[in-house]
Length: 345
Ligand code: KG4
Ligand code: ZN
Image 1 (cartoon, rainbow, N blue to C red):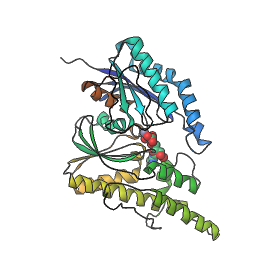
Image 2 (tube, protein in one colour):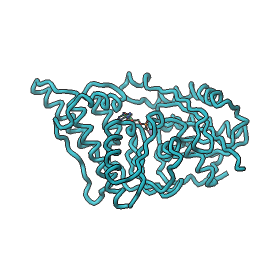
Image 3 (tube, rainbow, N blue to C red):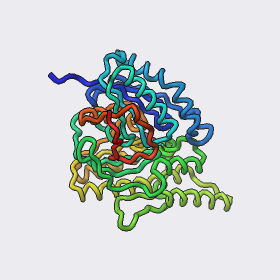
């Protein structure tokens, strides 16, 4: 019988200090997330210096809690997986240094994981039937990528944002409406009471790059609309603005994704990343996939936003493919998907 593989996974790329124990890439033994959102709220966004400091303070407690919840000790582990990029360098360094220390002390394989590969792999956790190939739209605060997952660990990027990430646009629009940080979930909530047809905001299409995105235009259009109302002394309806903005973003995300699904003749489609928990996006994708008889996958909200379970899922497939990083593994803030860190132990 094949031996079970238990991986301790660590994620500290932005403002969540997270650790998890994952069995065979798909089974969650524990998933601990310490969110720093309340700290950063005061500043209207993530403050990198504060994020690093908080990670240092919390990382050992979070790992201890993850082992405890799994009913394990460090001696029960088979490998340590950690996000080493992309992300905030000071924040990433905390997780990478911690993972190296544990792997060194316990003589365990060390596996560096790409953060987006983690987001995509979040879909494996609750869908035992999901296997590559499939298309995945990764939409988060830092990324908007349309990815063809050819096989485990093998990715082709079909399109990406030319400017703001989808989540970034949500956060900036929410701030302009006066909803606070992080804005995505707040826009999602108030948009339910608004009219998505109230205001027509632009949908960007990039010539010659049908799968690339641009959200700075729609963001500026919303800001101009709000400023225009204020200058005229007119009140605007936050719910209508939120619903109309959301519709413009979702229309583009669904449109690009379905075009790719058709062109690449895919029968499975998944979404991932923080914005993948958006209710309008989920509904829009579900409907579009149903119409095309394509299987649609999305993680539960807790696995959409940053967490370590998704890193454990990705680390397992890297482990199986033989990926082993050396003690010189470093944080790579602008790491590209599919790019391999060449040093091997
Ligand atoms: O994946 P994530 O936790 O971090 C990054 O890797 O960036 O994503 C965070 C982003 C934030 O921009 C947040 O506003 C957005 O995901 N988000 C949402 C929702 N929940 C989180 N955006 C729209 N609707 C939501 N329900
Ligand atoms: Zn993320």
